[in-house]
Image: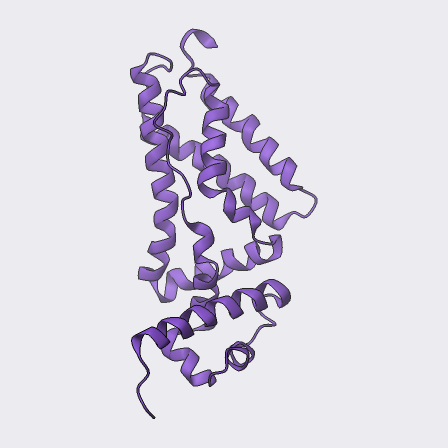
Length: 205
């Protein structure tokens, strides 16, 4: 079979991701087959596996763009804004795109991440890096508040990890408990972040 150009390979790779994302959103992980995806792309199933080692890897890559961090801590002076609100807004801008993924797909994505962590840890680290980046930026902002005498001295890194744990817990509750609405999740995040941070406000504000 004749070799195809690098440009053609890139186009096929992108097409596989696009079709896979659509199929996963419509039918879910378990009901979507790589054979269906390959057929819609116009390639053989074996060719698909030249680009992705497994359906789990393809699933993760198809939704990988949703994990991109869309903004960083704003460099302008935001020290007059409620600290808890600022932290929540940073989360919403940085990782809020994740919640545009259908709830059922988010649950399957969580399961797929466990599979990938075992089979291809180097791939999993790529996505875990987004969480660490969020915590790093949050720690920098907390340290800035300490330096401006708005927060008591505290381990900025440790506090950022606690806040991230709160966010992660509420996200998991949203994914797996369908009685929890998106508004419930966001309101619970705000409330608990405020509880965590308020104890460190200078002057008990």
